[in-house]
Image (cartoon, rainbow, N blue to C red; front, side, top):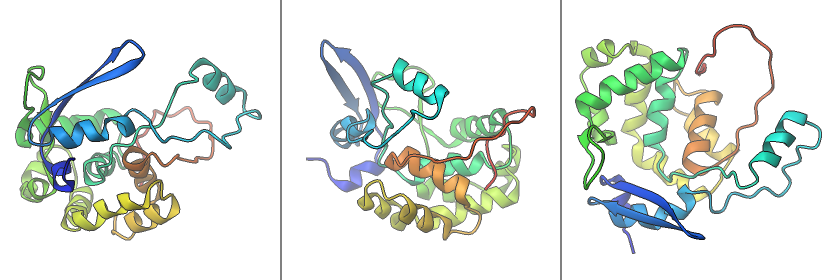
Length: 214
């Protein structure tokens, strides 16, 4: 049985089909936790009951084409929240450029026989130690970097929201209690960490795709 603390230890995971099952291998101090969590990472527990797409032709077609599609649950909150904050108010290219810069400088090499260049993102404590000028060099302005700092300072409390399951509005409210985190960032984080579905109003736009607001 993996210990809860193992969720914050590095691990590299290889997932591959093996006939009618899935084979999972992992390396590193967090390997036991990663293997134990693999079923939820692959979508176990995602419930499609009550998901009615009959009134939306595009969604109905997508559901028909991908009947096995499931929302993953990473069971890590801060690790999902930090990139979601980076995605605020900028394009996807800008957000992932910043993420790549900081990971290359402050991430650690993935354990085991991982592909060259694969790194483990910083822990909450490691994010907190990144100096302000590095956030600037990454293209993250003081508002977003300050939000990350506020979030990582309460990392244990954020991780405890995982006990709420797919907590929906409760998880969202707790995330939004941190200044700088709004509905969009909370929804993105909850989807990635707990497999909570995102409900968005549709809109039509001819502008470039933006990664979000707050």
